[in-house]
Length: 202
Image 1 (spheres, one colour):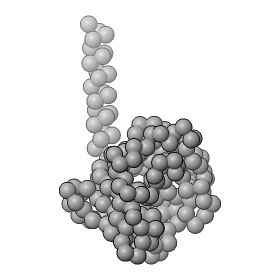
Image 2 (image 1 turned 120 degrees about the horizontal axis):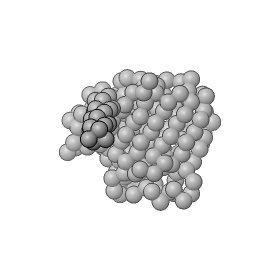
Image 3 (image 1 turned 90 degrees about the vertical axis):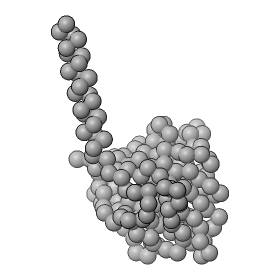
Image 4 (image 1 turned 120 degrees about the vertical axis):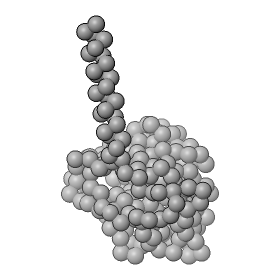
């Protein structure tokens, strides 16, 4: 009897805890328009059937869609589906002047091009790439789920439930900035995004 009562209390606590976590999640994309975001560059960003789409424009240059707000410590979850080339990325602790972006990118790229790795723009370049055997977790042409956790000096990424990298870097820990989606230069790129959610961390 006592054990059953204890288990009920424990189950209730777990449910309440998960509910509190869920309530903290903030949706960055409303599925209707680009409210809360700003376009940088001439590449195409638009909403179609509840999905956010980035697509190469006639200039075939880099383009970014950046949040109005800044996020320091957070857990970001996003779903993406690559069409055509699919070279993109999720920036954090970033700042932009036109299409010049400084900050760090969790890579979104075609197969065997290090999706989930961390690249420092206008800085040290690649900081870490996933082990080669982890490249298989990308589902090209299908929906993928990426999670990026940034807390203090520590960054971890997951792709479809698989941990891709973990990194400790004091330069990241000292920074702050916007979250931004990228479309790579070169043309022929199209990526769909949905369910973009962030949980601020203390």
